Length: 229
Image (tube, rainbow, N blue to C red):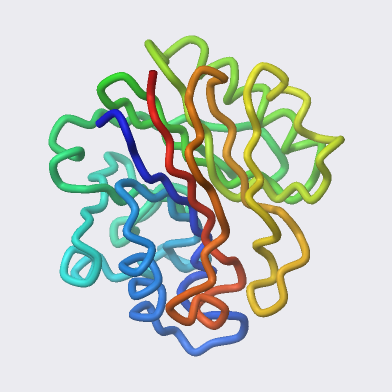
């Protein structure tokens, strides 16, 4: 597990910019991207019992990945917690340990912390207000310092379009914003990012626009190939 391909993807409830609901498009994008591990946002519908927008029965068949079993999902039929889950290779999932990190802010938010051998991955979808995002990142970095034993990667939809504001808590990390990822048809804003320990080597990174990704969601997925020390 020295070299890993990590990715993050906001699915927008599997309905492209305006619909219809077509999760097969998103799964085709993930299959083409071929990550070892991918953090997903907006995998559940927003209202009511928050049922899954990404059908769990199709995930392994179409991508070869498996979703983490999250104890305490948002709803009985939800795939994720606060709309988030992590897909990963079955051999990695066998030894993974997961915990939920409740976050402060105006809206209900939470992060997922995944503990692997030699690596802690924290998946997040930060709030719409910068004050909330600052408080959430402060909480996440403090928790990461407490629970992580080795190297740390934080990734997801940061909802932050500026490079010089809102990311102050990440001063001790290398921040990777591969390029504009929103809106998917004509990307202008770098909302999706990764932040990782400075001793992790970033081999390559990018924004993925293949496999009809511009129509599958309002975000394009980002990815990075890393090498652990």
